[in-house]
Amino acid sequence: MTAVLEADALVAVDLDRTLIYSASSAGDPAGLPPLRVVEHYDGAPLSRVTHSAWALLGQLMDRALVVPVTTRTEAQYRRVGLPAVPRYALCANGGALLVDGVRDPGWDGWAADVVARSAPLPEVLRLLTAVDGEPWVKTVRSAEDLFVYLVARSRAAVPARWLADLTTATADAGWTVSLQGRKVYAVPAGLTKAGALLRLRDQVADGAGSPVRLLCAGDSLLDAPMLAAADAAIRPAHGELHEQGWSAAGVEVTAASGVRAGEEILRWLLAEAG
Image (cartoon, rainbow, N blue to C red):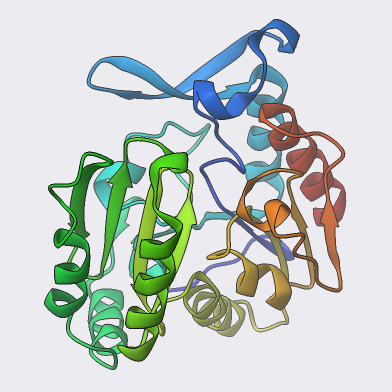
């Protein structure tokens, strides 16, 4: 991979509930401006941004190296339309790197080595498939042989005791658990957005021949390490981190929540990118 930087900042942005929003996470429709659909699934609108956010994102992509950093698989990521194809995108919680929209096989090898340091995926998958027939479970899936997740019929339906037991069992196996909306993720401890992002920044900095300022935005526990590692970061006033009252030095919190927080995040990133 040849790293190229034509700006002074690398801007790492989570997608769901940070940059883009489903109808249920956008906020009260009565108080929202018209929204732009940026993703369809099975022919129906799925994710949205404000029109102002779309324009701001375009400006940011012109000014800085914007890197989407998402737990989505490559296929799920490709459903999202952005103002331009990012130079780099990290999918599968950092386990897959796209360069100008093309998957980097060398990165796949690195990710496979990272995952191999934890207990085998089938062992953890069995912990989730054990409840696959329960009425509160919609589906259980493996994501690119890198991690596994369960989709519940509602967030409230996820049994607290089961989640606690799963967290303990996966920790013993060298995996971590995160509840995001209706999804319960189990991910090898070494496969982190932060680890992947810092690796990418090092490669970009080598190509640039100078230090690269890292700006980050995210809303979930899986985003927390990259927010803490950034030179400056911001999180929305909603989501997993907000619910837990998470904070760290140098991490701002939006005044707004829902889709308006996405717009606020982009304004902040633009100002920080200079």
